[in-house]
Length: 335
Image (cartoon, rainbow, N blue to C red; front, side):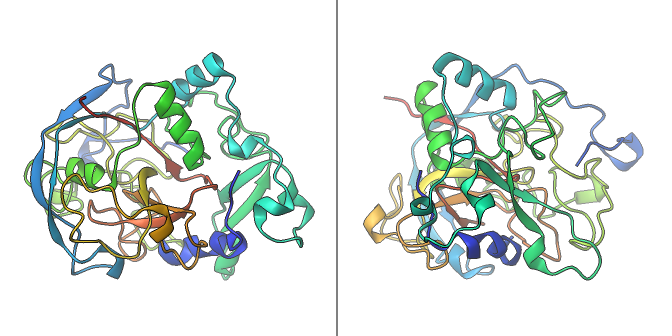
């Protein structure tokens, strides 16, 4: 287990960077149903495209031309059912299920609750509550108990698995004979064949009032209008796929990539880019050389807060920490 010595700061940092299923109605253009998807992966054609964005968050620039070879990508996030199959086959124990030590936290002064197995939960704030209270380390929380120690996976087989660290995601990918996507692969798939602002091929988040991704509608965190039919995580398959046949490339959960984090793009890394090596990774708020890039934003991203539900958006994430809004999917690279 490796967790940054800046972890206590990281938990509150989510708020500066960044439920249950409600009924849906056809009149609002909401998904009629969320169903299991039988296809495992879809082919993403190799392409040259402009990666990054010079007009948003600074870490998304500089926008630059890259070339990415074709690959196969999971059509949806890895689900609880899929991850359970992996655990049953291997006996794997996730980071959140292991007892951390003071050394894991990088400091000897660790509160007792942080020395118990657990993970980080988003806690909807009450009026006037400090942002520091929006995220809580909750002992007993892990992928099997995603909403706290008293929760379970009942009726959540097809929800994205959460509370997964980078090492957990990588272990699953290796077991499946695949790998985690590079940041460039994820962005290419999310930009669709039109190299558009959003995966559905347009430049509007909700064209015609129709929501194509699970995001926060309303003023975060005080008001959630649930126009898309969800107020928290959604099962996979609730929203239409893009032209590649891939679902949920933005919103729902942030997703791990294989890249070490650097606070800007490196234009010279432009042919099947892999990002900086670990020794050159920089993430001041997460500790050097421990942060990976996550992509896609989550259900907590709103128009007034965390505009990272765009293919170009990226964020640093401590590689040893999973939360209630981070998941992953895998890719298969042709030999």
